[in-house]
Image 1 (cartoon, rainbow, N blue to C red):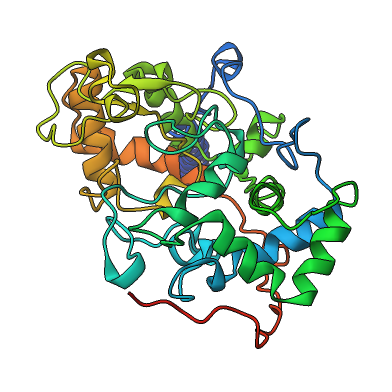
Image 2: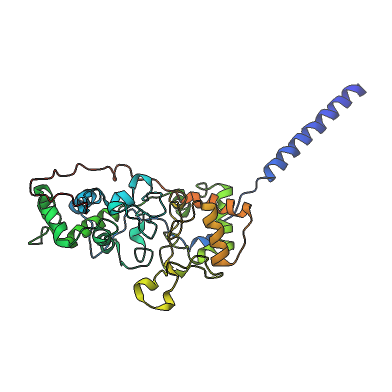
Length: 352
């Protein structure tokens, strides 16, 4: 009887120990709390980025999609918007700088077009106010698409009856709708619907399970480090200019940044703060594309902008959060359309 009591007593102790072990394991994984007040600095993506000056219509969208993929808008008829801003690769070409006419290289990295319509200006130096104005630039840039004039662009488009009909449908109030400005407006409308919602948006909308504990920890570190000083809002950036090398001089000052546009020495090394949406998929980094990894980019940003040396574990934690900003590519929306056939009136490629 004593032996039976001893066995039962031992079993009872084992049960208590097992229960304590389960409680300990549960306590070892606490829920990471994110301060809701800190989240007020951020907003989820809209379904599309609207403009009062250039209302979205289905006709403009259809035309804009075609023009985005149209290589005949380039002098050699081989480069389109999609050549440098590849929509199936998160809107970039994964090169430090892009190949242009006759293999010329640009001097700045091609930023993603996804979500870019929501930024306060376009280009690294802010020389375009919106995506409509931005769409005009590369077409006649001699290093990029290299068209010699607006007149040549319009001649190419007017040589194809299908484009003429599409322009009339998209801009029915214009007497002569096939023009350079309308080309840019159509491309702009197409780009205004290039948005990539992610799990971060679900979290912002109230789904507390949309992010893991590690991702929430990464966000808390993002805030503690001070990244939100520049990377806030809907796009986690794209809302201001900032001096590159704010806390510590940037080692490469060969590109003067916005000073190249304004001529004002105050703007030297001033660049538009890039948005962080899809940042894990849009390497290489910075205005010159010289940093190949996100680890390098995060470490450099902390050191030169915030004056902080991050440990490897902190860099990894920040990247864990940044990966939650990788959204869904709208595969149906970006499907390459069938482009109009060239006619006998279509100017031939100019390779010179």
